[in-house]
Length: 182
Ligand code: AMP
Image 1: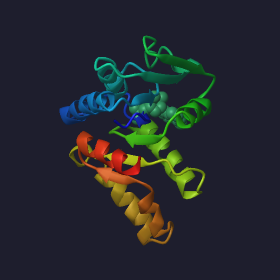
Image 2: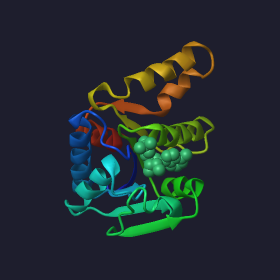
Image 3: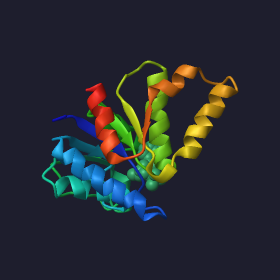
């Protein structure tokens, strides 16, 4: 059993391929089976809602952190173990990060990218060494990985940047990657 607190960053939409939702459901179930607590943005929409619902329905614990101004927009999921309302986005990310042992990135949009780059750049600055796992469902994040390679190839980042995160292609592999770091 992993028994860790896992921060999941993912879309507030479902995306265009059903594979994203399916992988999110499976990740939720596997995290619950590993006695992991979900830390997420407390919304009940898109993949965010999916991951929370699937942890819950499999008996797992959920901490959600949402800024006041998004309570309605993102349909605050209040029926969770720990529902925290922050004053702003910065506070939200800080509280999520502080309460997590590792981070998993699922498919998502600009918000997910913002969250990923924040934890990546903090790792680059050696402010933390929490595992960051990109769950590359159906190659969704290939362009992101290509972009990071491009930064390195063009001398704007050190090779070591690529070692600060791990890319996996299935929820099961994400769990295995967590086990290697635990
Ligand atoms: P998205 O990937 O755009 O669907 O957004 C996923 C989540 O990230 C949503 O809960 C957004 O509210 C959140 N988000 C978007 N921008 C930011 C930001 N700058 N800081 C923190 N969270 C954000």
